[in-house]
Image 1 (tube, rainbow, N blue to C red):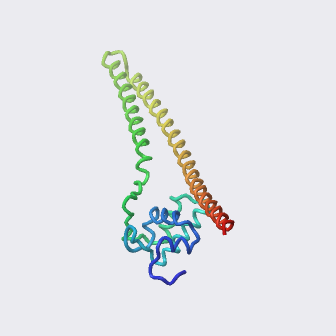
Image 2 (cartoon, rainbow, N blue to C red):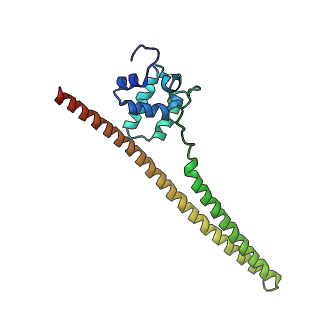
Image 3 (cartoon, one colour):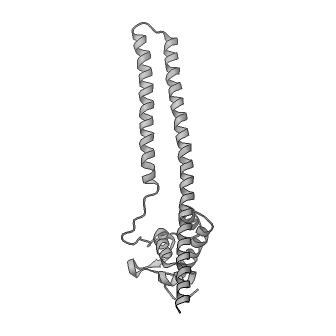
Length: 200
């Protein structure tokens, strides 16, 4: 590792033999674990940041997702209190966009359950007030309402299970996308090297 006090993205990329664009992406994505000074174009990294970048590279090459990498960095490296994302880069709140549809769906399911229970109870009470029902009919009506609730809860659990499967598939796709980007960059570098060797 170089003895310099601070390093630029270009210097880190050269030291780790990575494309600069990759290091630029990582410096924004994992900023809170990268010891740095300055902001924007003046941002430089302390020498210990090279180890963090190397860890990120290793984990992604092993096929881990960005979230896995973040979890691992949280365990191995302290948070940097002064880490502020560059202007223009705003990390998405954790799962807020993904959770919004799920929250709406949960709210509508809850509303349907409440309506179902309410209708069942009103129906039973209406029969009771007309003198046509006794306690056993009230009990039967409540059992029917409970059955509808349990059926809807089972459907909710099925939807949750499907959601978890989709999340796992999304993680796999994210890891594959990272690998494909890396392969593309390496292919570009390889082709540029070949073109340079042929033209010289």
